[in-house]
Picture: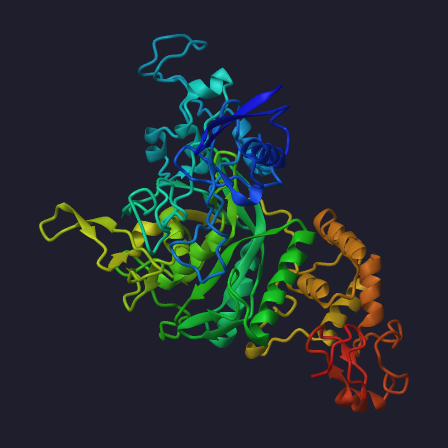
Length: 626
């Protein structure tokens, strides 16, 4: 059906008639150039609704951009040039500001499933108040909406599930009528909008009430993206705890798993943690420093290698259907009593998360946005969680799970917050010619016991930014994906004396060849994927054996056989393994020549393959020895 898009120019209003909204936006640009008599490089098409969002020149259909019949666009004859790459500042928008239609957003299958559920909470007939029969219904027994405050309070649910929050925002009348739903979500932005609709000079030369961010009033977030963190078994947590127990230094790990429906909370979502992986890090008894943080520039050999290691771990997880769902770190100090107890450090009178931890959580949540058609930008919030292993009041070890609010993410994205010497506080960075800092307000109980509004000048408590998430273990953990967790050395623990070597890998590979079922660990699986010996198709075959068969037949796959061919046979492998494909001569593989060859052989620092003496380049990956 033909549609008309109105164009407002300085010479009057024009009508651009197109055949369909399914056309690419480039057709509209070509028609606008024809109507105005100017090449499209000399003007811009922007929204006339005050947002000043510029229309892309190609790559989207008119329908995907949310345009409809009769919409009005403004022809700007003096578009601002594309900004050069610059350091992050409050004047650089993070995301495209043109609204996307719901149909153009690829929705997560779990979100689609939860959106299709009726989600009404059924109630039995109340024997005290109901005056009708068993087939009747009244106000005392009618089903409740998933966001009913009385139900949430009775079941001690602190935060609405994300889909319950969406149901609350979207009226029931709109859902029942089948009308096109309004996109009720817009991610919070605390950056100066550039360029401004008022056509003044860009920040920092000019600013007005339309382009400057509004003041922020910190408040507890009433909803959460993840309602529960479920560890597949104690072995998952023990894999990280073993590093602290062996060395006394703190450890941090990424959690890999999947998301599923959590029926305990109406329309709830849980993160199921199946494995952990420790990235390169510098650990001490009182803190941890990551070698590379996702989303930052990798500078130097160590950071580049750490970035590549993270990408390899993500790839290994993706092969078995897992994604990175969060981080897990320890904050443990022995009590010194000799009983194995640890100090109780994180509580209501001290802190739950420190300022640097909140900044890291906000940064990682911003790096993992959740796509949703209910948002004007196509994404809203994040399902990335932060878990802390620390001591409890009884001296035992327990886990706390958290997310940070959308306000925290917006503050971090705008580069407005920094850590300070007080652990439970954050400070606002000073304003300068590149950073506009809006007012940040919060409520606090004053010395008279009444609530008073305070201005962050510049510090404020981090408690306003925290979102509590429950955690636990499954009650019917019959099947786990990696039952061999803890039997293979963890990656990046060289400083702790735990090293992944070809000999250690060969030991497990040769042992698995004769086994009907291999209880593999994620550490071993990630090591196999990282060294690049097995091809993609054979890796997928091995992944199917791990996921679908629980390790049955894994030792008989072609990929496993390739590993046995390449890796040096362990000393106790007998004659079954032979010396084929190990890069060792027959003399060195037999008897007394083994120790001499081992002394001269070298392990590749890039892929860990053991090379024969006298070689300067790795036989496996081709990279130099040094």
